[in-house]
Amino acid sequence: MEIEYDSAKDENNVRKHGVSLADAGLIDWSSALIRRDLRRDYEEQRYQAFGMLNGRLYLVVFTPRNGAMRVISMRKANKREERKYESQNL
Image (cartoon, rainbow, N blue to C red):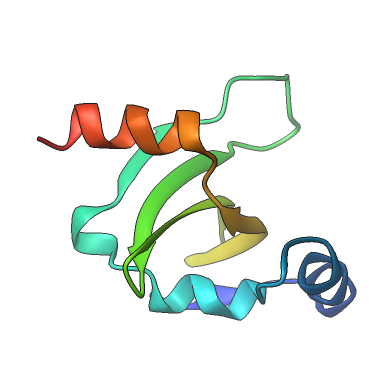
C-alpha cells in the first residue's frame, strides 16, 4: 500500500508525537483494528487504525486518496485506547 503525507505535517507530527508519518508503512496492518472516524463531519472519509509497531500500539489517522493512504496523524496509543484494542483483539 502506498503511503503519502504532507512533509510540513510530518515535521509537526515528529515534534509533537516523536514519530514520522512515514512510519505508518511499518505498522502491522494484518492485525490492525480500523474504524471510521466519526468524531466530526470531515470533508473526506477518515479512518482510525490501531496497529502494532515494534511491540507498541499506535493510532494512525488516514484517508484513502487516489489509491494511496494519506496519513494525517500518527502517535502512540494512550492507555484507554490500548485497553479497547486488547478487548477487541482477544
